[in-house]
Length: 335
Ligand code: CP
Image (cartoon, rainbow, N blue to C red; front, side, top):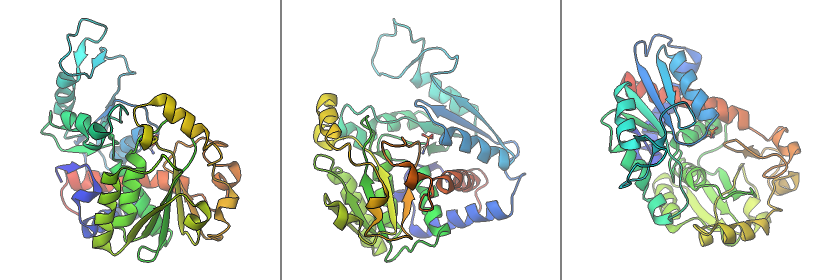
């Protein structure tokens, strides 16, 4: 495996093999598998789960990892192209990325959307400009429009819990958050559920429709898997008989680069905080999923987050296991 960048680069059978490997590594640990291997981790944005789960994954497989982020005591990092570096930044990303990559057998990169231009973010312009700098195998640790490690873990979580693929109802719901969050998690989660063969509903207020390119990608995956993709603003109808409510906030696509207009619109939707009433038409078995971090009392209330529906800790642990499988495939090369 030269890259783990997008679930769409793999067949459903290949994903199934990766998840079987993740289960095997959990049940029968291989603490020598990656002895002598090094993973470089470049975080241009903050993290808790991705930062720690990749390091834990490498340690459990006998390898090592190092982390670089702008908040560490490195030279100031310039990320803009075509700039005269006469300010604070003394190191350009164009040298930093190949240098870091040269110390590892693989590199993980996190570079989130700047939310200035939707077309550039959907085209992964910045992330591609970074991965183009390296020959080393790379892992997408969250880019402008994708978070493949998160949704690989989420797929495993649903398998672990016996949530049906064919005939399973997956609701990707917008939830309130005070800040405009990128499209990476909702876009990746929508595609993952469609690829898994689920009947997917995108539930969101007016002004928060996902871009056509993201919906089209999910519909293409559903055509292959036998799933389906719909969208609605009607909460009760959208949530009826759901097996999963995956709630996440995202930027207003009607006002993508307009922070003031986004803020005004999202404040009108502050009631989109998940509580038990959301599950009235779904039933006791319906699960609440979230990639974390989550704002209590803002995106979801304590009763749901701390209650039996919530599988957020299970999802987070699966980050480590799913990434162990990716690293094993990438650095050992056999399943
Ligand atoms: N879900 C997720 O990627 O968490 P972090 O931002 O903490 O890595």
